[in-house]
Length: 259
Image (cartoon, rainbow, N blue to C red; front, top):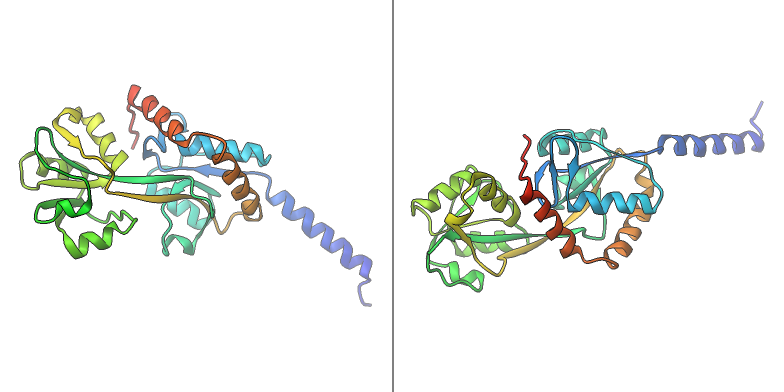
């Protein structure tokens, strides 16, 4: 006996209801070591990107759980397998797009800076001013905004294993400058008590865009267009620079870095 159209209708309604039940909330996480955009204070995730994402979720009435899952590599792994739904801020690249869908609207810019020794007389106003000097970068770092290609084609740099090692090389004069994402390098100087030993040059050498990432395995992925529209609307109504500055001040008052 063939099922009736009524039966098909009931199945469709049940399927829609089941989808709604599956999307009962989203689990939100963030890089725990990226102040002022995100950090873990030992009890909860905080930061400018966390503030914005949670405000947008509240605006579209999508329940959420804010969850610390460990270091950034674990954040990405949890998003890959669908244990978390949303990563509050990260760069877009082809590898991540295999398991994440990014908002069309960028949440913040991610600036990179040139650091030199305090008292070092290095005139800088553009990338070209670094030609002929010995530079340092952290192994595996990608800057965006065309800087990676410019470094490869025009600058002489050596890669160090981490921010700490690059500042040590800069301190002893092995390199003339160190290019790094601005806030992680600044956070290292603050927590190590070495902020006065180095100087950051202006302007930023690159400013890449960061986005909110949604796991492709999220049961709530259908809410992404609504989230993106509200994110765009929300960011036009506030001073995003002030949010970043306020969170930088908050972290500086208690510079926690929980690994």
